[in-house]
Each structure stands twice: as C-alpha cells, then as structure tokens.
Image: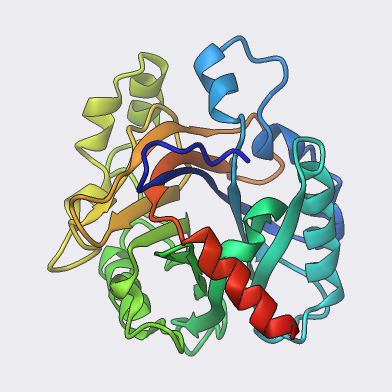
Length: 316
C-alpha cells in the first residue's frame, strides 16, 4: 500500500488532483488523446523530482470541463454513455501503475469528476456522496457550475469540487460570485457544508486571468519570472471577502496554467499538506493544457480490529 505509516497515529496518503478543459470535445475524442502523459507523467522527462512525485499515488481525482457529448446524463446514477467511456479509459490507464477502482463519479452537463482509489483502501472508505450546482446565467443554462464528491477515508473527511466559472477578463466579479455561491450551496447528507470537511480540494477551469497584455506575460514566462506574473493574477487579487477564502492554498506556480488551477483547504492548521509537484502536461489539443497537483497528507487510521468486527457482524 502506498500509504506509508508515519507514526503510530497517522498514515501518509498521496493524492493527484487533475483538471482539463477539453474545449467541447466528445468523450471519444478525449480518450484518443495521450492522457497517460498527464495522469502518469511524461516517460521521457529527466526531472527526477517529477518522476518521484508520480510514484504510489493513492487517490486520483480527475476533473474535466467542456466535454461535449450528444447525450448528457443527470447527476449520479444516470450516467451518459460518454461518461462511462471516459471513466473506463482512465481506469485502464491507471492499471498500468496499480489496482484502482472508481469510488464514485459525477457529471453535470459538460463537467465531469471521477474519483479513483487504490483497491486496498476501499475498506476504509465510508459516507460517499455527490452533488452538483449550476451557477450559469439564464442565457446559457448549465454552462457554468461545479460537481462535488465527498467521502470519509479512515477518520479523515474529504471534499473534491470540480468547477467551471464565468469567462472573460472583465467579468471578475461574476467569477468571484460563482466561487461564493458554489461554496455556499454544495452539500451532502454527511456534512453541513463544504468547509466542514478536513480537506477540500478545489480544481477546475476557474477562469482567473493575468491582468496584463498577453505578449508581456509570455516574455515573463520565457524568463521564468513567476513572482512578477503572480502580482497580476486575478485569483490572488480577489481573495475574500470578494472571492475565494484565504484558507485555500495553491502550490508554487512555475507554468502557464491557462486558467486551470488546483487549490487545497485544511479545516485545521495542524493538518498536514505537502505539495510534491504542480505542473501542466505537454498535451495541447484545446486552448488549455491539463494540470496536475500531487501532494501528501496524513490521515487518522481506523482501528483494524473494529473494522474486522464490523465486517463479521455484517456478514453474520
């Protein structure tokens, strides 16, 4: 099991949070892309730190925006054919590095979120649920919003949100409003609100832009002047009270994300969060590149003897 015991009281879990806006391509088109380079890492990379980051991932959260299939499913149970095609393709890729099962998946129009967990962890998972929220303008229903999954792993609660927010540089206030509305309205039978979870992982096409000319941004990127670029980042400029909470952390950006971002929130300061790798894949079949954040956290393990007793009671 990739979850390595760190002490008598915690287990280390590695998570890969992945997001890709495929720009109105069908599921069939998406599965024909080299998604393996994104989910498992580029085999030709000479970056040893990056290679190490992709090892022994316990949980994959894979989110898509703008998947354009002719038949769209509802939320949880009524999956579209395209949804299942994409799910099966991801699972096939992951079997190259381990035994993973899809814990749950959710779709709302063009937004998808799939949670894959190592099979050896399944017996420690409980309270799984999903939700979705539409924050689209009336003129373009179901174009913007979020899909959401939550579960308990051992004694630690997780929430994953995959969102697509209002586009265009001059509509910053609407993006901020989307963030607040999504965080306020996503819920589950097991939690009062999104921020009651120990960890919230928020990924997607957040659509925050750099408030500078494209040519200037490209020159700064060529010279890897990331600190200067981030001074003009709308996301960082619009933290609460107008936008996303200050509690959300983002790993150091050393790539042009094309509005794709991954943020992590801890409910308590003493909870662990260690970013291992944050970057984009060399895969460009739309005007976006897919991004991935790989990070380690510690969870509180369940008592093995209690799990065995519960299993016996269930089967008796």
